[in-house]
Structure formats: C-alpha cells, structure tokens
Amino acid sequence: AGHSPQVKAFVTQDIPLYHNLEMKHLPGADPELVLLGHRYEELQRVPLSDMTREEINQLVQELGFYRKETPDAPVPEEFQFAPAKPLPILLHLQVPTVDGKTPPKHDKEEHPDL
Image 1 (cartoon, rainbow, N blue to C red):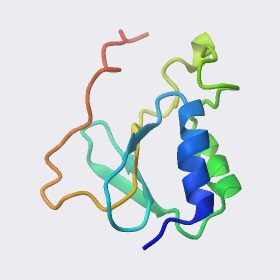
Image 2 (cartoon, rainbow, N blue to C red):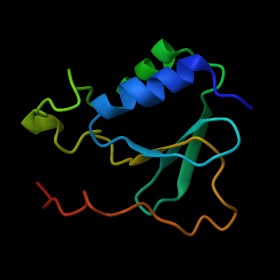
Image 3 (cartoon, helix red, strand yellow):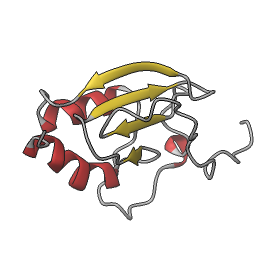
C-alpha cells in the first residue's frame, strides 16, 4: 500500500510544525491517526488515507495542537502543554503490533501541574 502524496506531505512537512505531536512510523498498512488517553489506551482511530493534507491539518488543529510557523519557532506559553485536551496523539503509519506493549517515551511528562 503506497502512502498517498497528501499524507506523505503532511508527515514530512507539517508534523515538524506541530508542538507535542508524536509520530511513530511503522512500516506496513495505511496511515492512521491514533488518539490515546492518559494511560495510552486507544480512544479513537482516524484513517488518513482518504484525507487531503488540508483536511488532516484541520483535524489536528481541531484536536488542539499548536502549529508553529517554522519547526524552530518558539511555542507561546499558553500552548506549551497543548493540546489543551489531555490527549497525547500518536500518528501511526500502521496498525501497531498486537501486544501494543511499547508505551511512548515519557520525555515531555515532567511538567508540574499548573
């Protein structure tokens, strides 16, 4: 299954602009946006194959992710822990392995409760 150019463009050009959007690239099936809750339980999957790059960007922004002007642009204070909803989101470019025992790295978890 080849990835659509739209999705590929989003992955290569747009993901670096989003603060706290984590990309897991697993070879194989069609790309999906996987919404994870606090304990990394799966809440929802959104198949991206049929979406245009514009639609994917709109979706991610609706979910509350902050889009920077450039990958190195500073993130405003109020968006440091965006998305405001407590949902880490993983963009899986494939269905994860069956056991799913690999939680994402916790490198952004140290923020104190505001």
